[in-house]
Image (cartoon, rainbow, N blue to C red):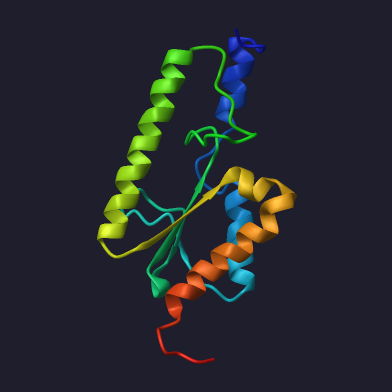
Length: 147
């Protein structure tokens, strides 16, 4: 049973947005501060990635732990009301994510998935941001390059 009335739950859910989330803004600010330039929400690519780095042929998806069913995550909790609907919805999202990632990789794109909990929790945020930059830099360095 939900602890909120249906009207209050509806108001809470209406405040959730798919774009320009706090985690996405944090990631964009970090990349921009390091000199990376990117495109946002490219509809030309499967899955409309949150961040596209065309120069590096890399896309970044910032997944909300609830909406994308992040298992073993402290943020993800299965809803107590309308459980059948939510299980089906979250499973469908996970299946769609896997298909989109596969399609992008087949098209030659490097796909980076960042989970909300990796950016929200200060204890892992810096490590996550550094890891993403390292992944992008790995793409740009060619074998035999010396810097």
